Length: 275
Image (cartoon, rainbow, N blue to C red; front, top):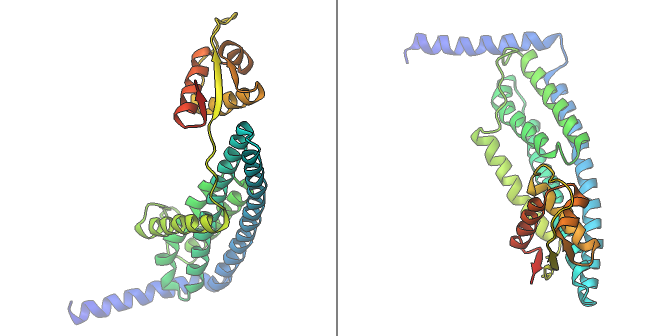
């Protein structure tokens, strides 16, 4: 690169920084905006930790009931409590991996000191927040909604500093940096899960006896088996481990084939045993 080109490049960078500083001069200072975002993120971290603690307490109760049922040779209730623990732990892992990801976002926001770092640092940060919001949307909507608001704040910061045009920013969660941080958060969450949640005891699947009868009414429309399996399992528990296929189909408002498919899925998952 010639001396002229180097001088032009240096002048060009200075002019960009100058434009950014000029835009921010009459608006909320950059550091203040970032600190506000950090504060709001920390509030969400507290909410996630509070929810995780409640899930841990609920898991502890179900775990103790599972052990007690096993000691009393109550296979049906032991399986029910163990399955409850499994569902609780799925939610807890989402909470904990989200916490890890947000903590990394906070750390990166705290390191932004100069205008020139805004675009480089902010793009993966916003991708992480967007992905985390999506994971929490169906689990804890309140936190998910606030993460969406925080991302909007970060986006406005980029626009108002002049780092990007109002329509130029495309938030990507698939960037290498964002994906790496999310994967690390998931791995760390798995480790934390092992520390905070004891290993579940081996529980024998629920023994189920199946009875086939022709339905007395028309066959309902098929439904997704994935959403039906839990209802069929609940039916079996309520009826002492017996499933009358026709009666179950009528009770749940589904077809006999839907019930059979759900039974197959539960059997393959090891959650019931049919003789």
